[in-house]
Length: 318
Image (cartoon, rainbow, N blue to C red; front, side, top):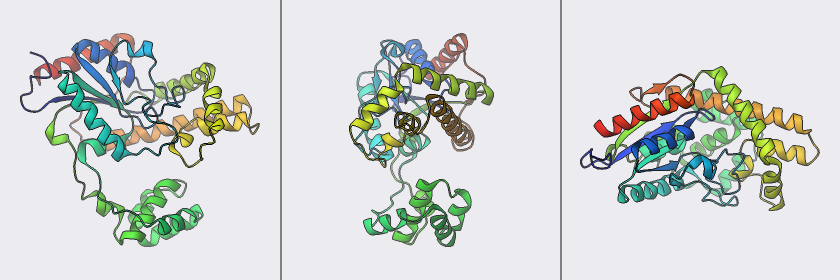
């Protein structure tokens, strides 16, 4: 009996999540090969961009190993993509896999994407552009102080340096009179109750993860990260676009513009990646349901195959 039919009315959905450089992509391919009929669906906010093959660590054709991969590099860098649009695209990708009688394997480290797809999106009303412009023009310290007055819980949770989230929380409470947390509690949509979900969260040892992050950045620089960023700069894309805020882009741009040496750019990109991985690690440790299995060991070729077989067996037997 195939996994696509073994769960009755609820179609199967495998999910491999965790911080960057934790081995998700290799495990997803191994699982797809173990299952026999599967499609890998991207849940990483940077890997959606066509322009970021190298700095997003998008799997190469060789790494994809003939397994169909969906939602990788399908968005142009000039586009402002978001979680709601990704969730809609992911729904279509999952439906396509099920129609093909394949098992879809969601893989990625963008928690907001996964949460939006599985549990729905907060029905926050459209924000008045004037309010948004006013909030985003505030200096970081002033914006955080304003948030502390209107939404103390959010201000306590968010550091002033997290300007994007501070601005978002502040514009929502100013425009709607209700906190972002209020709207998030009223989530609507989501497919969690409609699928037979088989999740695995990778939380390998932190030292191993940090070393992997550093080595990956070195490989990116060797593989042409400078040329990738130069092409983005040549397009004249605005700094506010998500593709221009992706980790590594700003650091490489500083190198290309003579504001840093190659070594300095590499060290800054490595530091930014380690910080991002740390935030992801914390999120995936605490935010997913506690019954989701966690794997807390480092991955090797042998362990990837072993884990893939165990995941396959879970899919087959429920």
